[in-house]
Length: 258
Image 1 (cartoon, rainbow, N blue to C red):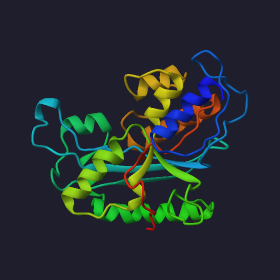
Image 2: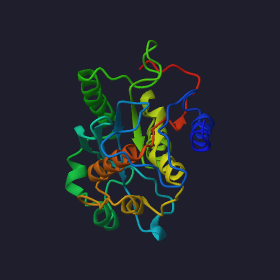
Image 3: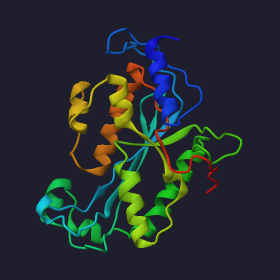
């Protein structure tokens, strides 16, 4: 095992991702080799890539305010082809602070009428679950730890950082006494994989795209466009040889059966 392979193996082991992983041989420099048309060997066949948008205010107005999800998007990325095969988008009605701030509308592009025409988070979650069940069933995909016969799974959730699932969704479900679906307790932090693989800590998502020669497509801070651009970055990282493994598991010793 080369030193670069050992480093990636140690990283995966430290985050409890897998006991054994296959990696693509990397060059001795910090920059990985870039196969002309081949993707790296991947732990998963697909990723469900997500980026929530939430209520927000200028920093000076944040005291005593809590974030509520106002856009719930997802795209299904085929890691073999690099293509987005399905997408989901639902605007969500905030109830703790129902009126969007001007700052929030300017940042995200989400209008007051869109959230008022949306659904509460409690309704959004089963709508997303129905979409997820359909697109995964059509492709015979299994999330990790949801099938005793295939505990490693063939598809996983991916976000940029732990904020979306680890803080935003978890805290809102707790406050509103909503049962969070167990599938959201396990995900891939693409930022963590990016920093380890490229040995670079980007200032933000936009810089990460720029460093890989990818300009942002669409509107920044649109949840659906952010998700699509994150899928593009993942596709580029796959071509460079990065492997995507679970980085966060809130139920490390449980089999999720719902």
